[in-house]
Image (cartoon, rainbow, N blue to C red; front, side, top):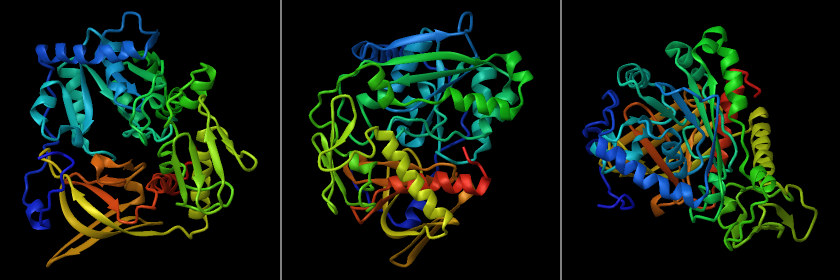
Amino acid sequence: MKISDINYRAISEVDQMPRFDLTKQPRKAKWYLQLLAWVLSFPETFIVKAKIKKIRMKGLKGPYILLCNHNSFLDFKVATRAIFPRRANYIVAIDGFIFRENLLRDVGCIGNRKFVSDSSLIRRIKYSLEELKLICEIYPEARYSLIGTSSILPKSLGKMFKKFGLPVVTLISHGHHLRQPVWNLEKRKVRTKTEMTQLFTKDELRSLSIDEINKQLNVAFKYDDYAYQLEENIKINYKDRAKNLHKVLYMCPSCNTEFQMKSDGNRIWCNNCGEIHEMDDLGRLHSLNSETKHSHIPDWFEWQRQKVKEELQSGKYHIEIEVEIDSLPNSTGYYRLGKGKLIHDMTGFHLSASIGDESLSVDKTVLANYGVHVEFDYFEKGDCVSFSNTNDTYYLYPTDKEFAVTKLHFAVEELYKLKTNDNN
């Protein structure tokens, strides 16, 4: 069976399946698998001419916490090169373990469900750092950036750093989104650069408050790949550079209509009002039939966020859609349960289904998710949104193919901020 296959199962069948073990302690990578990881990682980092600048890293060998930004699979390869010749444990979402759980555990991976509060994860990180004496590699944004810019970080990070009292290092890469954006995975020719910085020493962690730690971390995690492209004068001549851009830029800035944007080649346009934008080889947008409102792609993206925020503040926000439901109980693959209804409103997510004589009901409160995971044309099944509890992960595919799951990305983050009075 391939991951892209649709494998139907009854709700009761999936309920009886063993669950992914989130308590297994991590392992030190076997020497031959570590050697293989180096062999597989280094060539692509040389192809992109990756420059890794190390700041305040002299003499630091480990154990320490390594926090990496997340834009493409290239992130893992650059991180492997950055810490060479040392080994690490890596926190990986369980979809990465499908059909290869033993292999990933043997290479040092720690399985986790995204955006779930799980105390066992802290215990496994502790084991990695204190017992195995390894670097523990974490991607705190917990999903690929949709537009090559930074995402919200969990405030629990500062508390965790204080708890362990070990050095914290950031690995911020630039250009990885440009090379392979999550909405169009064809690789482009892009040179990249990375800064590896010891953000906090042991002594600094002792002297700083949790709030001060989180503030410094948020500053360190600011990045913008399209700004990097302009600064470095990186020209991308790939002819389909705007193809699928409408999956993240789903609202027209001219007529304010949602879900009528389309894109192909180097253009993105609105089917409602006819506005056309062309993307040049430096990643800038230019309107072909009116004034350009957002030449910088992340500006358009953040304008949409503001629109969703206004909808939330007015109390009018409500999404109710039909979805195909896939369950991921363990590493044996996805199981299609059937069609259901997904509601996202001011109280959070509500998933329900009545399939045959069986039913499913899953609720996720606003405070249970500071972010949400979305995918585009996921294993050729379509665009989807996913969320988890400790027992399962649900991948939800809207049957309305015009609906943009990116709107849910904004709504989850902005709802969380409103509920926690966080204006950042």
